Structures are given as structure tokens and as C-alpha cells.
Amino acid sequence: MHQKLFSWLALAVALSQLFMPATGESYQVSRHNVSEVVDSNELVLLLFYSNRCKYSVQLMPIYESAASQLHSTLGGTGKLALGKVDCDLEPEMESNYDIGKYPTIKIVRNKYVNKKEYRGQRSVEAIVSFALEELLDPIQEFVSLNELNDLNTRKYLVIGHYESNSHDEYMAYRRAASNMKEHCQFHVKFTGGNGPNSLTFQEHLNHTDSLSLYTGNMSSQEELMEWLTMKCIPIVRELTFSNAEELTEEAKLFVILFHNPQDKQSGKDFERVVRAELMDELDNVIFLTADGILFKTPLFHMNKTEADLPVIAIDSFAHMFPFPEFDDLYKPGKLKEFIGQLYTGDLHWRYHFVELMNSVEDNEDDTEVSSLKPPSSKFRELRPSKHRYTFARDEL
Ligand SMILES: *[C@@H]1O[C@H](CO)[C@@H](O)[C@H](O)[C@H]1NC(C)=O
Ligand SMILES: *[C@@H]1O[C@H](CO)[C@@H](O)[C@H](O)[C@H]1NC(C)=O
Ligand SMILES: *[C@@H]1O[C@H](CO)[C@@H](O)[C@H](O)[C@H]1NC(C)=O
Ligand SMILES: *[C@@H]1O[C@H](CO)[C@@H](O)[C@H](O)[C@H]1NC(C)=O
Image (cartoon, rainbow, N blue to C red; front, side):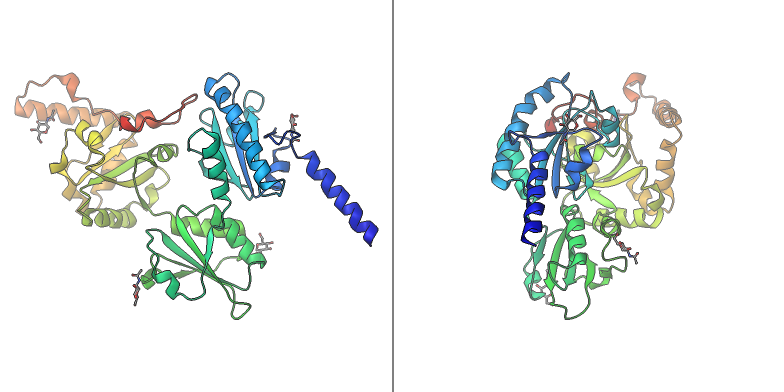
């Protein structure tokens, strides 16, 4: 018995040394062995780089130093590993992980590759604190629901009741929650087996008409993720300076409602119309609301000002098209028709061009035709491109 235990320990130690970089730095991984690292750690950062890219080369010593620091803080506990992938040798991984630029740091948690990538500063301190923060428990425990009353959160709530923190179903909840924590706020009450395990979603604590009970497989991380994705990620999202770049990476059209921050109604109406008429566009379109004062530059490019708000516009990454009359939002099918015009390839361009030409002729205006091209997209610069390093927020 004792003997057996000893040999298991020896094996474990040998294995952990095998997968531990001698210097405490990051792991070089290939398509053949990435799963060894990913499967044996809760959180893995994967740096995709190319030695031909100077930003990759600049980042490397920083990344290595962050890896050593994290390794000495956490040890080889299976919590965290930093890996790196040489894209010149691993084109297959580059495309599997959807890498659009170098360097990119992907976040893999419980084997699930997060859509979101590391976008913090490229410094040792920032990478280290990001990783440590990512390892914090995504779920807050409560004893009584009253405790949740004091929460001042804009996120939706997910509330679990589980027997204990070592229950398999709770583990699945925890893994799923850690991948969704920027979208929802997660809570748990441990019941000690007093009642069944359950999971509910609610938009706000007192908003009980939005309450829904999870009825899927409680042990399946995938099923939980699917449900949480559907519940936690709103159909109409808010465009901010910090999420703009990430949103462009989904490579979909933007349909944006620019509104005055004081005007809450147009956003609600917009969402209602999207839910009622435009749900089948979600594969191609991201619906957004944006503070029209903050994002005045794109408005200005469409010859619009604060006084014109609310304004709806489509950004196709080539051009921006204002929806001609905001009030047409209330006419069933109008916004859908407008979006549909963009799918007809370059026809859309001619359509608007002709329309503009006609209106010019009517007005006998002598404005130069060249100035009548649809305004160019202000989000275009943000699209993923190889070798792009920083995103100048001021461009917007
Ligand atoms: C993975 O494979 C690569 C290429 O063969 C090798 O350089 C690297 O050391 C391996 N990494 C691990 C963690 O085994
Ligand atoms: C929810 O309602 C309770 C009383 O019904 C109230 O005390 C509490 O402040 C409300 N919480 C929120 C977040 O509105
Ligand atoms: C629930 O999910 C777990 C983990 O994926 C799986 O092993 C189990 O077979 C599933 N149960 C049912 C009833 O589908
Ligand atoms: C810009 O908007 C103003 C006010 O709505 C309008 O008078 C003007 O003709 C517009 N200019 C162009 C080039 O569309």
C-alpha cells in the first residue's frame, strides 16, 4: 500500500517535471502536444507569434518573464500555464485558433478557447495581474438572497443552488461561468443537499418575469455554455471604445443606433424591433447602441450631429449608411429592407449613389459628385489584419 502510494507520487513528480519548462518560462507547443498543456491546466495563455514580426519579437522576453513570475507564484499546480506557438511552423494551429494578427494571446480555460483574447498592456505586470485575476473564483457565494439586493450591477444574474462546492455539477457550472464572467454575474448557495441542484437566470433580481430555469444537462459544460451564451449575451449590445475592436473581429455588419445618452427609449424600441423582426440576421449582423455624443466622429462623417439623434446606421466596413428616417423604425419591415439592400453586393453602393445623385439633381445643387460617395466606415481601420499591433482609440 505504502509502496504503491510512493510509486504513484514518483510518477506524478516525474510527469510534472516533464511538462515543466526547466527555466520556469513558457511552454513551446505544437499541434501534437498542445493538448497536453491545455488538458492539464485550468487556464492556459497561448501566445501566437512569428519571428518575422517585430512586435512578436519585442513581446517574447516580456512574456517569458511573466511566465517565470507566474510560475514562481503558483508553482506547477495545474492552475495556469503560459504556452507559445510559432506560427511559421504551425500554420494549422494558426488557422484553427483563428489568428488574424501577430502577436495574439489566446485564453484557453478548461479546454475551451475563449472568443476574447488578451488585450491588456504588453508588460510583465499587466500579464501577471491579468492571469491572476482570471483565476479568481467566478462565482460568489451567498447565504440569503437578501445579500444580492445590495448588488449594484448592470450584468444579468445567474443563481445556482448546489449541494456543495465539490459536487460534479457545481464543477461544470464553475467551468462554464469562468468563460462567461464578463457577461453575467454568477452566484451560488450551497444547500448541503437540502433540495435539488438548480440554476436560474434573471435579468435583475427583482425582474422575475425574466426568470428562467435551466433544464439541460447539469453536468455538461458545453450545454451550460450554450444556455449561458443565449441568456447572458444581449441581442443588442452597447458599443464602447473598449469593445469596438473585439466586435469587429466577428466580421459582421454593424447596425448601430446612435442615441443621446439621456434618451433611453430609442434603445428599447430598437431592441424590440430587432427581437420582433431581425432575429434571423444575427448570423450576419451585430446590433449595437452607441452614445452619440461619445461617438460623434462617425456621426460627423455621415453629416449628422447631436441634433439629429437618434440615428441608425449600417457600417459595412467599407461604408457607413444612415437609415434615412429614424421614425421608419416603427414601420414594420423597413429596417430589415434597408439591411437587406446591403447583401446585394456592390449593388448597394449604386443604389445609394443613384439616390444621392437624384436628390442632387432635384435640388440643383452643384456639389461635386465625388463628395457624394457614401461616407467611409470609421470602423474599418479596426478590422483584424496581420501584423497590426495597437489600436488607436482616438481614430474613432
Ligand atoms: C511540443 O513539441 C515541440 C515541437 O516538437 C517541442 O519543441 C516542445 O518542446 C514540445 N512541448 C511540450 C510541452 O512537450
Ligand atoms: C428589490 O426589491 C426589494 C424589496 O422588494 C428592495 O428592497 C430591493 O432594493 C430591490 N432590489 C433591487 C436591486 O432593485
Ligand atoms: C450529461 O453530460 C455529461 C457530461 O458531458 C455526460 O457524461 C452525461 O452522459 C450527460 N447525461 C445525459 C443524460 O445526457
Ligand atoms: C448635411 O446636412 C445638412 C443639414 O441636414 C444639409 O443641409 C446638407 O445639405 C447636408 N450636406 C450633404 C453634403 O449632404
